[in-house]
Image 1 (cartoon, one colour):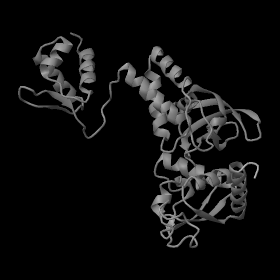
Image 2: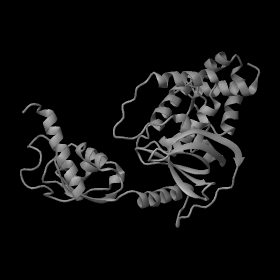
Image 3: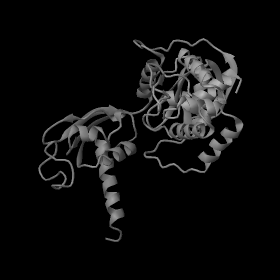
Image 4: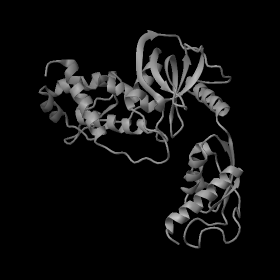
Length: 346
């Protein structure tokens, strides 16, 4: 192989396989001399790839972790697997899958050959994901279009359906995507309304990057350290102004660590409170967390009653809702409905 750039890419692809490669085997694979392999290894090191060499009859070369992440070389199967995984996570707003993964998906799909893009779409269309909660599903292509436009500071056009079903056309300067764990939102400057807006991404359709570039405007928030933090602060403030606030007061018959690991961060952090439930109201001995090591959740959120009630039930321990009254009433109604469902005809 006489084409040096192509040979370096092939060599890099081999080294990214987690094993040690003898120099002779690399030379045979690339149809060059061991001396050429040594020179190519030096070139890769100059480019920032940390390649270690070991001496001896069984020695060879291997790629190790360095101080920074160098560009990766993926084969067809690896690229398809990563794209499918990112699409699945991004499309359902799974907790922990945030704007960074959408940016990664946008970069990957931009360079995927058409044959691989077809394979990714075919695999996703043939897969039925199981999701928890009531988060709306989103076409990953919508997310990648929004993320690419925000990163490249390119104006967007799209159709938007409001909560009452009204359809409007929007032209915006996208700023950031925000994930709440259940839904994706776009923070953007609306050019027609001349003001900042937040858009639920599952209500966005037919997004189109116009090609017109813009200089990002500063968000009307104070104290932000980065664009992402500014966007999160602006989003929280805008949501607080439009959604009713629930002031939660819930006692759990389980340690705070146990409960916190099973609650989404948006519902707050429980605090230890020994004896959080009355004696006898916790789980039976040996059936779950110790009721004497209880905790209490006091926080505020703007989620729906239905979603909060379901997330409390998924904690898998006894709990008592002290407030707000509307949540107490809903949990009582839900409990009665579930009891009837489990005992039909009684």
